[in-house]
Length: 493
Image 1 (cartoon, one colour):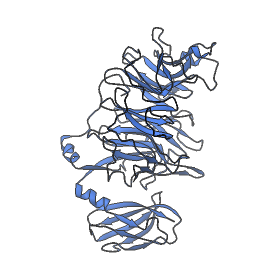
Image 2: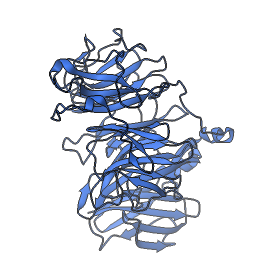
Image 3: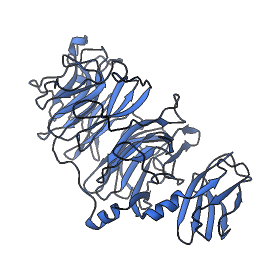
Image 4: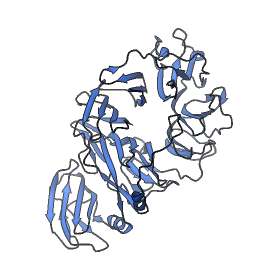
């Protein structure tokens, strides 16, 4: 929830659109929104939406990219302001603060203003320490309170001369200048010595959920996730669900106050499952939600082969859209984005062929992923991450999707498109099990959106199409009939 006001969500569906919601929703790329190749050789980590449609974009890019680490776009993706350094460590978070932006992260805690840049009148007092080593002063998350004070969470020394563990704190309150509130009961996590709070969020009753790397939380034994009452005292009724290993990250607090967590090397108490990366949901009590099925994710770009969830959006119909780094989700082929039911099961037919394809800019080649998702009031989705192709189209680091209602029969047709063999070595065949035809056009695109092969009115019910001469790699096949358009990935070996 992040803001302390109890307003949760603006419903973006009109009465007519709710009728369509009884059907299925799928998404298509909103071609009216594009930044071209402005963002390259890096990735977008955070998006902040303005009520007038402007978008504050934050990321990290190599020196040959045009984009700085912060940019402001209009509602169509045009660049209004571009400022800041070209590279940042980690994934800074950004918040509205009057007409400015509060920015925090590893070695970053600043106030930005447009068009000048850094507001040097803001100085966090606990960053004045001469100590700047591994256990340095970092504010990793923040909450702007209604009275303009700021809750700052992370790990920082409260004495610039004494850097002993006794001077470390993980949560404080500061004013608009960065000066700490002397009456605030600053949170102290004594164990381990490098304990820190990485994420914090609010529940509807005004309490606070904090996550990170700690074994002791305000004098009580809590591993990685703890709860503070509205007066910032520790809620000792909150269940401790984890062992000491690893680190936990709050990904989202939903409309039912359930806590979605990304876990790295964290073991769950009384759970024999042991894996490096997990994604679970807690009840407001801190207990693991038994009604949510923990997803199994694979990622070809991970050294462990395991995928990860970085962000999610809650839809008015009770479903959720998850984004991250994965190529397979619960046995379904999904490239960094998936829609699930409340119990965690995959919604079929959505994002089957619409995800991150690659992240290649010259010699810069990384595995593609999505870091952030923002649901606009009109139902469109803003997606930021590390990619140079999305859904077979040349979009770089930022793309917008728009919902498109489809009837059940239309969705079955889309699911019925079959390309085989896939991977293909010399030829492939297209088949529509429902016998739809005739075909009007078949095209093969590369991941930059260029047409490499095209057949017009090739066959009433499909046929065999050559891939001779195409380099090994991933392509997109688009098929057009008199009734519908289809697309499907094709791998050439």
